[in-house]
Image (cartoon, rainbow, N blue to C red; front, side, top):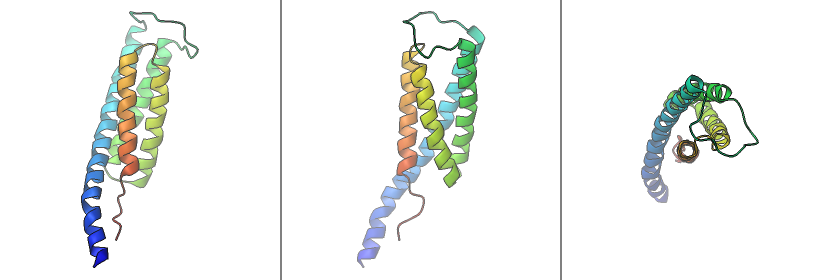
Length: 138
């Protein structure tokens, strides 16, 4: 009897977690598209309107643009794969979201608010993916 109660108590939590995992996939697809657009903008313009302080990790804008384009495409594809619930997609999604956090941290001096937004979305996606357990605890 106590086992049935435990299963019933886990169902709403797993339903919520599955919902957050689907939301994480959608967030990753959105982040991928935003990264792609950010990269296209950096490649197309190759200049900044406000020049900040010198930065240790300084690349040419075209280089940063291509980094963001590649990351954006990979993140969007992994987000689509995450909708299937595959374990490999969950592992790769967490890894690529962490890599995106690092890339956007290094992009902070150029577009700080945009970078902070993308970092926050990646943190939410990592949390949602990491807390989802696709196998019920019977």
